Amino acid sequence: MGNKTRGEFFMGKYIVKRILLMFMTLFIIMTMCFILIKMLPLPAVREMGRDVNLILAKREQMGYNRPLLVQYFLYLKNIILYWDWGVGEQMYEALSIWGVLTQKLPYTVMVNLYSILIAIPLGLAFGIYAALKKNKWQDHVVSTLVIVFISVPSYVYAFIVQYLFCYKLGWFPLTVESLENAAFFSARMIRSMMPAIMSLGFGVVAGLTRYTRAELSEVLTSEFMLLARTKGLTKSQATSRHALRNAMVVILPMIIGEFIGILGGSLIIENIFAIPGVGSLFIMSINVRDYNFFMALTVFYTFIGLASSIMIDISYGLIDPRIRMGSRK
Figure 1 (cartoon, rainbow, N blue to C red):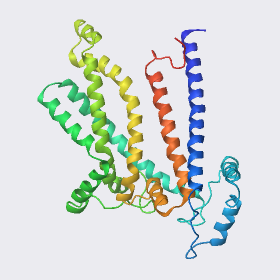
Figure 2 (figure 1 turned 135 degrees about the vertical axis):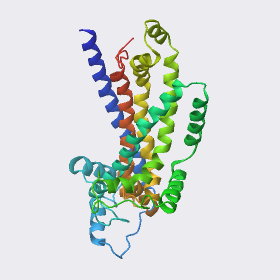
Figure 3 (figure 1 turned 60 degrees about the horizontal axis):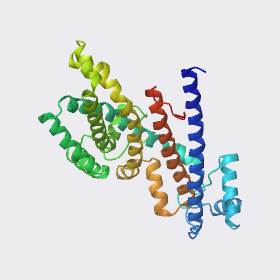
Figure 4 (figure 1 turned 45 degrees about the vertical axis):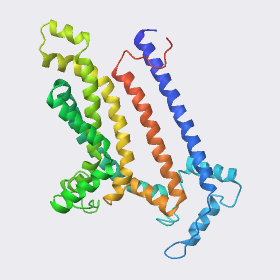
């Protein structure tokens, strides 16, 4: 077996092992949340504006009056066999939870995707500039700003952006456009999303700037860079051909981690800017004690976090062929 084939075998073995571990972890977290929720009192079904009979019938189908183990078995059975996550009780009454999530998810994906796509080039550019100007006044200015922007929570940026750019200057609307009025990638939708994108992006730009500066500064002082310069390459040629490529081995997986950070921050940002996404739905499910929605959204965010962790680990092996994950020394 050649080195390439052996590396692919160990990579595939490692991926399978991590996926199995991910689902085991997801199952444990899901079980714990289910047990904790069942320890809480069941919310009463208010009469006003609700299809009470349908909700009560769904509770009976889910085995709410049966032992806890039976309830959990029925819950897993409905998800695995029918992809049935239940119906809303305290919000979106009697509507399918999965149907509501599929309507809300595009807003969350869009605001997070826009934020990361804008933040990545800015963070890389500022980080490269600071590394090339290391220990000069430009580097000190960038480093100071990075510390400031990393230290401030995203919801503080949201209030500043909302007051300055939406209220005072009137450049952007206070709330996001509906999909009925604007398409996803239309200028109107991007303009309405811009305050939320800016609020989420400031911290990501600062984080990527810090990572890029640290990694590139270390690479620029390495021995192979000195060798490249002695062979006649200019500083810009050696940086673009060798330094950046080696620094990206660490920086690119960090970008995936930053995306997870944005996803967590969007829970609050969606509420501030009235974005009808999954994040605001999660907060609402906690406030009104809709346990069915809370369970589904907890599983969703847990799965995203675990899957991203696997992607970060795998990306190291794909970017740097020297890494042999899953192989024995």
